Picture 1 (cartoon, rainbow, N blue to C red):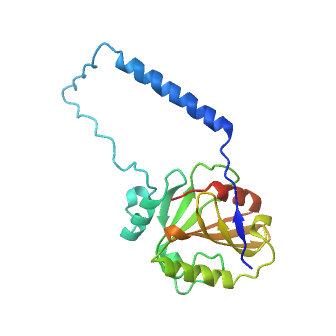
Picture 2 (picture 1 turned 135 degrees about the vertical axis):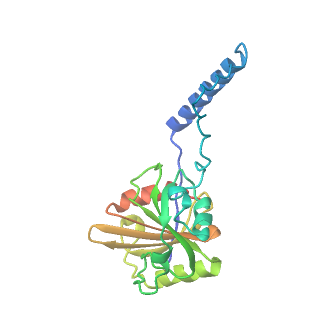
Length: 224
């Protein structure tokens, strides 16, 4: 039976203090700058020396793979939706996800209804122990995502709860209003989770040898 897990997200007080301190520094810098005697004089470029190139516009908020050269248009669109604080260094995984010959277990990367897939590295973790990588599945539409999630849930032999590090198929609801399906498989030395963010029509897969660390990381993981 599917269960709904509600998880409270807490912001440590020390982060709030750090944020106020940073704001004070920025205000002080702004005041100092406004009180300067005048604009800085531009230094002439020595003859025979080419001016330095402008900063590359590639440093945007979306994670990509080597300027996106290896990504298809659909993959670039999916990457542009992701937070660069949560996921980075994304590479193509669409061929892997859409392979008709790949085994489709409840938490495998092989999926149905996917138009783009990426394999990314986690960014700065809010807590817990992040996985080595995260697979991101971009579905064609809501029905395609629901069908793939239902297939995975049906194939899962539920023996407990994901939070306890056991094989299970569940529904979740977070205070951020994110909700979806959460399927996990436990094996010797390996815990793999698949989950969806229903309103975004996106799925994720991550594996670890530390179920508690992964679940703790997932609670604050906000990729979109």
